[in-house]
Image: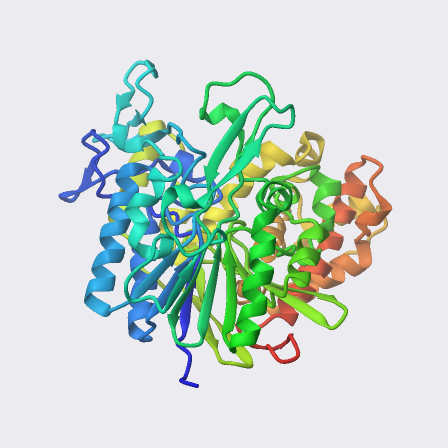
Amino acid sequence: MPELPSVAIIADAHFHDVKAGFDFPGITIDGDRMALRSWVDTRQSTRVFNESTQALLAALDEVKRREIRHVVLLGDYSDDGQRETLAGLREILARHARENGTKFYALPGNHDIFGPAGRHHTKGFLGQNAESVEVTSDSQNTAPGTIFSAGMFCEGYPVGLRAMAEFGYFRQPHYLHWETPFGASDAIEARRYDTVSPDGRNHYRLMDASYLVEPEDGLWLLMIDANVFEPRDGSCDTGEEAAFIDSTAAGWNALLRCKPFIIDWIADVSSRAKAFGKTLLAFSHYPVLDPFDGATGAECVLFGETNVARRTPRAAVGDRLLNAGVAVHFSGHLHVEGVTRRSLGEHEIVNIAVPSLVAYPAAFKLARPSLDSIEVETVELSGLTLDQNIITAYRQESDRSGTPRDAAFDAKNYGAYLRAHKKALVHHRYFPKEWPADVLDAVSDLNLLQACRIIDSKAPADDDLASIGMIDAIVDWYCLRQAAMLALDDITAQRRDLYRKLAQSYGRDPGQGSDGTVGTFLAIFFGAFINFLDRAERDARSFKISLKHKSAAA
């Protein structure tokens, strides 16, 4: 059997085209005209926007340098599915494919496409003097100063696939094999399924974009469209955004209920792959196992039903895929680094969570498959230099609004910038949206020793604890939660040992619940460091998965 090709897996590129028109002048810095999203919006988002072009190009440069011929785009390849954004992305991918012979295989994420009819978007940009400019695709949006641009609209199925049509969604002449859950045809009408609202009033025939492709002899890429648009009850205009529950918090939990034919197809593909001696890799935008591997148990107790809690797949998802014969699955969506394993009898499934290119930690994965194993490597982008024109625009925006310049603007490289963005995110998203006000009021200005004395008034003096501000510990907590082993380079071994000691001395198991006091909140928060550190320190940047025994080892 010939040697199997390597595959690069890029998740959540969230490409925003800084050279897009969007029917407004944008901002010009040092002769460079750009369509830039504001820092005010960026610091509240779980991803950065304007840096996405550079990050994607850097990832593709790495693909070229390593002579990788096949690249999977694991959903959320666009900012928000805008027509103009997808046109810019297609141009970049097509040029790379033309110049390097690379083949791309795309999957839709929740940001790339919406339902059967699409949806409008309104976004904030920076104007020529760093003033705020609203751009919308909704012609009914008559807010003063708002600019209309049809290029801001996000299409639905199947129109939203057209820009990426040549990247796997439709049969290409060079594929050795290509099929969908419905058969060999790539016709739109042959790829529809029926769905109905729970009250039976709203019926739709929606398209599913899943496909199986054999790019080279012996390698099967199972590309699963796990987007689910479930019709709502009641009276709705046909196809409008409000008529559907979207995929953002649904994913595989909803797929089991709304698209069960996918599971049957996966089982059939897995069986045929085994019979024909094919190495099968499965991909979807959404995780099939908890990518945090249970490490976020404290989060629900502390903050209630957060985005992480809502988007965690139920155990039934892993069970169904184990029974369907899936051994290795790559996921994105949560911008998290992590490897999770689940066993059922003699079978095991491994979910490999691929980080985003535009959130801490910025990285993608390489898979080197063989008939009996898969080697997985993490490629980090932390060393990229920053586009100083973008940083200058942020400084101008801050100066214009009279707000302090963020520390992120002085970052030395992309990795440091994303870590600083994570700190801004803590202040401007997590604190106001998730943290109890009484806890914030009590701990924001404390050091760790002072925080420990809220838990235990007799906590002994400790210079190491006193030297670390509570805010810095909170940022480390979120970085470890999101980046796992990729955060270890940014947190010294001495500080990690201190966090482990902190958890052991003052931590509380979330299973014990909370009595609502600040002290109990802090105890549960500190206790989570144990799970985060254990998860980070047991994973590796490179590892091998044995397909013979379906087990993984660093």
